[in-house]
Amino acid sequence: MASLAFEAPAATVIPVDDGTGFPVRRVYCVGRNYVEHAKEMGFTGREPPFFFIKPADALVVVPGGQSGAIDYPPGTEDLHHEIELVVGIGKGGADISAADAREHVFGYAVGLDMTRRDLQGQAKKQGRPWEIGKAFDQSGPIGPMMRASQVSGIDEAPITLRVNGELRQEATIADLIWNIDEIIEHLSAYWTLQPGDLIFTGTPAGVAAVVKGDRLVGAVGGVGELSVVIK
Ligand code: MN
Image 1 (cartoon, rainbow, N blue to C red):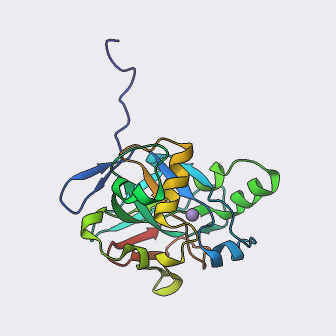
Image 2 (cartoon, rainbow, N blue to C red; image 1 turned 30 degrees about the vertical axis):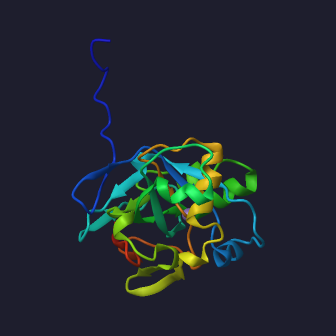
């Protein structure tokens, strides 16, 4: 093979607190992982965790201390915010036990699982895949990665989202139905994890629509803040 037919797309790289970069391979997301959010979406009880995937190039990386922007996506009239703790995998593996899971964690970031809720709702009703509601361009704004060694108390950290200064989502990571270790155990039973994989761990209650001009500021205690404007 003499050369590529066209230029290869650049990897998505998330800045790390030590000045290096975290090259993203895959983006896994957990559905309905906080009790109150599961209820607001019409579900009760503990079900096994389930996963969907966003393309790595759907991420919008917002460096620390900066404000990012995403375009209001086409095809929807109900774009929702979902603030989430994102786990970065640094050491791969399959069939990882919950007890060993933290050895595989590189660090943590704050992310938004932006959702075209109307299209996701139609897909659910028709038994179709969720990609049109979840995996669209610019659907994953994400802040910088903090190495796990620099984050204390992640399992009880507060997670919040404000829209134009108003508190919309508030919980703690302890409210996760499936905690970080259990998510990694379940996920790695079905996919072999590799360095560079991200896991969006689910969103607390309070999801709602945003419109052009809204400013979203998400935070996870000890990890950082993510500020994004819808344009
Ligand atoms: Mn989500």
